[in-house]
Length: 398
Image (cartoon, rainbow, N blue to C red; front, side, top):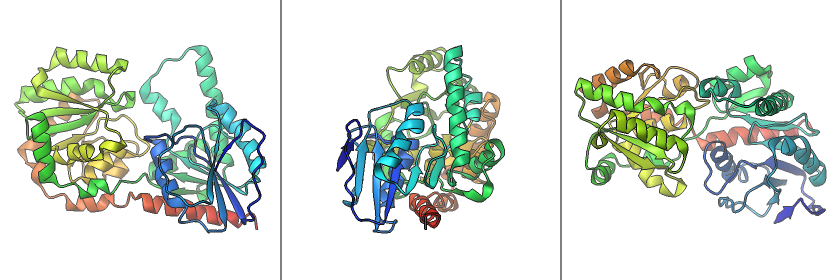
């Protein structure tokens, strides 16, 4: 059942004991990032909460990904709004409108202290993201962002419980935002089971047919400045100078965006086109191709300057691929002792580490312990953490 809040509809009393209102406005048809987290939790939450609860999703996009939930889950479709209006006006109005007993905020966006016990998921630290992105804003835009950040942090502090997607995010949430540690817990981003089922030999055969090469280093350039993709051309040049014959696969390319032109120009200036391949962004319907890219790679190169979790690193590790990654933010937590550590700002350091890995044939080693380690990043576990926390919050109502 969909309820359009633009009209003055009334929610029919169902006789159920509890009503959980869920801010699921981060959901989209092909969710990624925060939307992916929301989707993976929601497809499990319906089966983890008491059957006496009613669940109402607040969404702003149609169509939505299939959730396969029971009839007790309904949705309210709101017109797309600014995060300020959504968090400060729309959500409080919906709490009253639906007579909600609990609120689940699956995105740590603008908010306030709400009238019901609230669980918020914290995905990252915006201050640290802005520091490495080095974006330039006009005065008015900077002022708006400052107001949004004020209400975002206020909402985190005011939340009854905060679920953080990594221990790094949790520590920063406590030290920077003043959130009480006793009301925080960890709900990691998860690794999809598809990455554990991939067959490396078959993946090598398929990618060799696609690229005409068997050995390559995989990295990503989806357009986020944190990815540090601007130095990829210099890394290719440096490793070729040392004598590396392996190719590079640069995945996640979103054609039509301005960063792609800059990246292509840099590659043309520094590296022959036979040394690299550009692969378009692969959505949820192309999971096999994504798994193959990870599994067939000799090395996965993580160049990010900051991560609240590090999803791509976790996925590559789950495929059994030898990874290179920095020792900052949540990447240390995700990579643990299984990755080759690099300085993401030092081209010579990165090139030397890649070439040394090939000389030691680390890409041929058995990485079963690494694969086992990544199973701690489980969507099932994360959904259980959130369900358990919500049930504990219900005690405050009794």
